[in-house]
Image 1: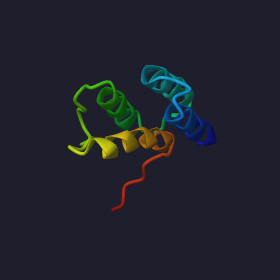
Image 2: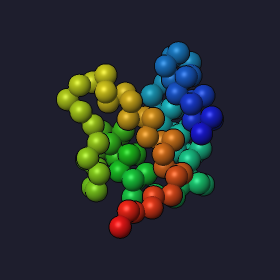
Image 3: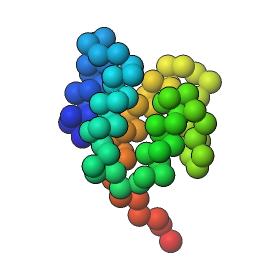
Amino acid sequence: MEDGFDLMAKYEAKQIGYEDFIDACKTLYTPTVANSIFFSDLLLHLNNGKPLQYALGSSVKALNRADAFFFTLCDIRYIGIS
């Protein structure tokens, strides 16, 4: 997770561009993804596609930037509550 925050910091500091940030996050999290459907939808959303299962994004652009934080959640296994 710390590596993901490091990538976000580099992106926010304009040390890397948006596409490089997304590619680096994809490379970082792919080996540990526990929720592949969410991960796929997040990649679609961040590449201006339409997510298939999850509602992501907002009409407020500043909030959309926070969606990149969701990469840190992709390697956490979802356990449903019954």
